[in-house]
Image 1 (cartoon, rainbow, N blue to C red):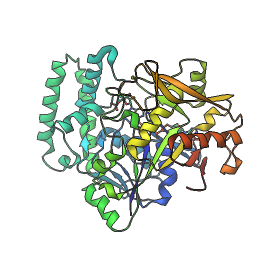
Image 2: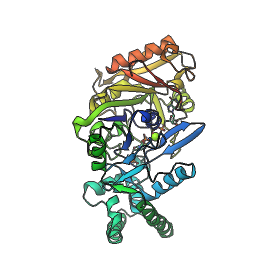
Image 3: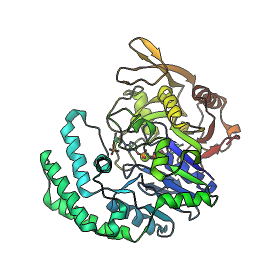
Image 4: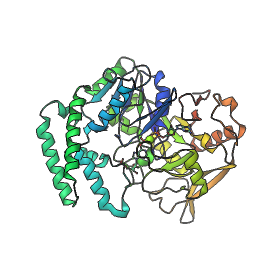
Length: 424
Ligand code: GDP
Ligand code: IMO
Ligand code: MG
């Protein structure tokens, strides 16, 4: 009767969507607790591919309740697009999706503010997804936000006041606004608000705790990753929500003692989209090889992801912050052809080695361990006994370095390309 949490340990895009879908049959309900349509979670099964942005990745398995929690920021227009695409593919959400009244709305002007804030930062820009995430969370924290519950009564006046406030902020930023384009966007957005009203809009904290009281088990799905967390990520190159396990408590209204397993998910290498420090980044042919074999392009934006070797200093930090109890290793198949695999085991900062993630990583130089590659395609393997001995050694190395068992190994994008280890 617990909430197990699955969250990213790196800079996002670890494969959270795929594994939430795989694990859903073990649970009674699935819930998102933070982030918004900056997320792009990819699921592949039955030769089809789906990309989810705001809707939880438990939506396809067994018609179970899926919850968009209070910690999420929701753009009605992008939600409508996503829900309509799912409906066209045969998945109707009206019975199984539950949206928190306390989730904050992303307004059309939030997108404009996101772009204007980025432009004002010039070379120091974050490289956001442009979905208005930062401005929507800023309004939440500054107590100016509009929530999903607000669309149920007196919405027009609240919306007009928020819009006027945003327009004056945009003027102060000297943002040029294409009036015709904005009016079109706003009209579509307001129609999407009507569309949203037809869904189950609930007091999600009561809904979730009611399920727990009834003896049900929930899986909470993180978005982004620990290194993009507003407090512990490489600030200011972060997103605007709590991506760590604690965010699940505030983002769903779940008490800490109700948290069960914490699944920490990571790739066998690292990627990062947008700006910010990345100690193990490879700008050479090896980085290119990882990018092309791993198809490392943003699932929604198409942006090329920066690639590098696995960073165990950052991962150890993420394991600590989240209290990870089980590890999930993704995309090792991308490294199938490599003669040697490198893993950053420490940083050298000002000539001194450290294993603790420092305040400032800008000048951190990675110290690498080298392991032999397995030089065998693992994508068709379904049992750990089949794994090449070098790959087994690589997994043991990760477990030893991180101090947590690896429970699941993903060997390809498809739902079926998943190996559960014996102790999982
Ligand atoms: P998320 O945001 O954490 O859900 O991850 P994304 O969906 O943004 O990115 C993960 C990408 O890797 C997607 O394109 C997945 O289809 C793909 N993927 C997931 N697991 C594996 C794997 O084990 N091997 C390979 N080659 N691709 C994978
Ligand atoms: P999923 O859930 C990877 C990054 C952006 C940018 C920074 C801030 O698919 O793993 P924002 O739009 O949130 O203000 O952008 O965070 N970012 C992600 N990177 N995966 C994501 O989500 C991301 N969501 C945001 O690229 O650097
Ligand atoms: Mg993604």
